[in-house]
Image (cartoon, rainbow over all chains, first blue to last red; front, top):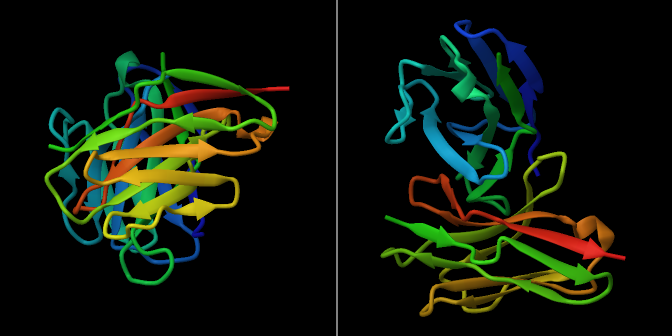
Length: 119
Length: 113
């Protein structure tokens, strides 16, 4: 399957600061990717869908001005948590989706996740 | 709206035995995909198996197989010959037309030696 990397793998920041998380597809190009959030001992919840070259689509209840998503290329998407607060502490996971046909069609490839702790 | 329900928060099984994890879902769509993902302590999401709704034949991947009942909207995962490395959280997921996944709450599986 495709390889997806995330950076950083974990980050600790002070309340009020901004944190940028990068998600890279290392071996294929994808027009669509997704950002999920996972609180401790809970499931993954979709935050937003990111399309290369256009604005991201946010799920209900997710503040687009707080969670800035940039999908500037087919291999890189970034999530910036602005003015982070302790309640933003969570595990953030990106995934790329393949819809181009082939054996991996309609499969999602997940990054290893980023653990964010806001003090 | 689509929903995915996993009614077993935790399960345990003895090594080498068989265990079945339950999943039901709700959708009005006719064509879709269903998945089982494994999340070990590393938290990396690993695809276990997937099923296309238009295929009647149940998917199998080595020791993993599913029982897909479309009319009942049921999608259970059977793990045969359980191994210690199977210990993980297991998430059932439904793929929407938009491509993103809707996950169930997960089942924590413990394989005991």
